[in-house]
View: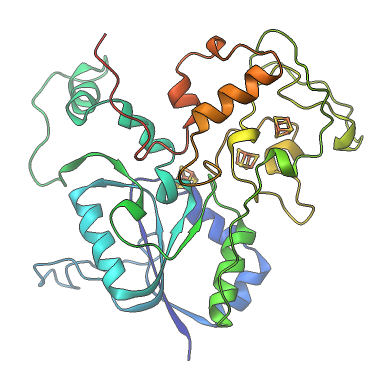
Length: 308
Ligand code: SF4
Ligand code: SF4
Ligand code: SF4
């Protein structure tokens, strides 16, 4: 009998749904063994019944539930609870669901400040009243899914990787335990050459790093030592493909931290300040450090900034 799969999306960009398609050929085999019972991006399953006859949102029962996106409204909260109730196994898909992701950068503003900025204070907006009726009420901040309901497995990354989604689905279909997250950092998996000293100033991303096209990455100098902000020291590893080389490093780009902190208790701010200082770079050169170092992990870590 096919396994029943439900998927929901909250505060997201949709990139993690595209990652499911990016699984490519193995997806054909997975789909043969799966019955998708709820997935707003693919099917028009009505939350309040096909004719709107129900008073509460309802999701069909499923063996596996995937949630992409953090929780930003009371509707997301109710749906997360409903997904938890109806799905035997619940998986957080991508960094938004795992630790807030990019939408949680908004946690540096209060909800009132955000509403004012978006609906009244923008130069392209007429200063009318704020929309309040017939729309879900925003929560006070963006929450990771696990801050609201119990989550059984996390697939971090912005977006998460097709290999991780396929690995998790295939393991579940075969009745095996879900693959564990890497306990290494991106730096641990990075093959670049380290000399333990850096140039004195941080460079803009627009400047190309030094590397020889086609030469092995072991011959390229560590990007942070070249003066680029690379969040590899404070970021969980595991994003690499079959060769295990971190995705961005493979493309000669510094790590932006999309797999989130090394552990739930880790403090990327402290880890990055230490890493930068250890090679002679002054962390004070980085404006907006809290947001930069917690770019994908703002749920529970970023707070509204004091008014200027
Ligand atoms: S984790 Fe990234 S790709 Fe996935 S939904 Fe969030 S913003 Fe989009
Ligand atoms: S700082 Fe970046 S480039 Fe340097 S070793 Fe770590 S991941 Fe690689
Ligand atoms: S190198 Fe860093 S930013 Fe790039 S995919 Fe891996 S964890 Fe994400």
